[in-house]
Image 1 (tube, rainbow, N blue to C red):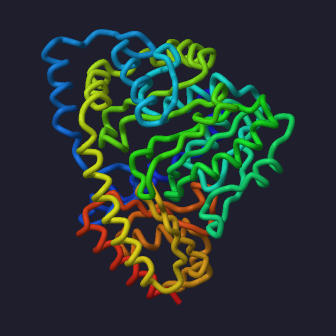
Image 2 (image 1 turned 60 degrees about the vertical axis):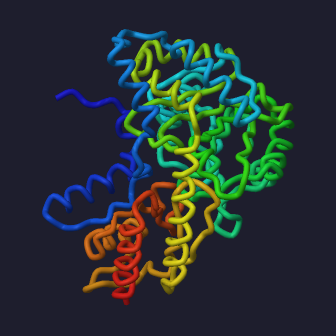
Length: 397
């Protein structure tokens, strides 16, 4: 058998997917597992979006589309950027992809040469570092502790920059922490980037609507850096459209053209029906999204109250997305039936097998002392999960 390419062994399987797989395997044996490992809204896609997709099918909109997306969708995205984010991206600066993850990968492929450094605040979404490594780039991590609300400072950013720094990649609201960078916090980072004009900024804003503290702020609105910001977004989180696989970027024209060129060689255009659905999503009522956010806020408060009653957990206070990222250091070194909990991964496996709740280890997100808990689930499931977690942790000694 021929050896596989080295790049296969340079990356890891996403722990979010791995834990969801373990949960499904346990459920297949008849165990009632509360799965809080995946970042997926449990709401259904709004009716007006589904109707647009059905109409597209009935009208036989089933042929290849332009690689960068159908013109009406790129126009809708351009207007959305201006309406919601005060960002000016012409339609020819927009590339539609098979999910926001695809858009990020396109960007990294277009920008990163072997040895280039990509600065990533930690905690970070699981795939950021692996995408960089796939392109033989070097991820450079900046640790943002819970005491800083999991957000980096301008001084930390400045200290991480070297002559090899090519890009900065971050999310706000953040997966896995739910932290949100304010306008002033972004301004402080921009002050650093102004001194380093060769660094691109990749801003993952997929959770922009799920924000509990007011208006979302995009780093691309700062005049001094806007010409090197790539803004990533999509339909999955804000419109409950995860399976539709539709993401997009707004970018400097030369970057957008490069991404279109790359995408044309390995996936071509996104799904035609999803594109028609996306037009309806971006131009239609946002009321279903706002109602979903109200539910997430209520769930956040429910989960926060429950986590705060569990001795030993140090809880963060997320301002967006739908995750908690508590510190579980207190439980490391404790035992159950003679087996020691050495790592956050051990704790997640223990909570899965003993408590029947599926969570994700913080090691996957760059912080080995935390775990990620999604609250994209019903109130009943969340209440049950909190009870099970509390009882399971109480058994550790």
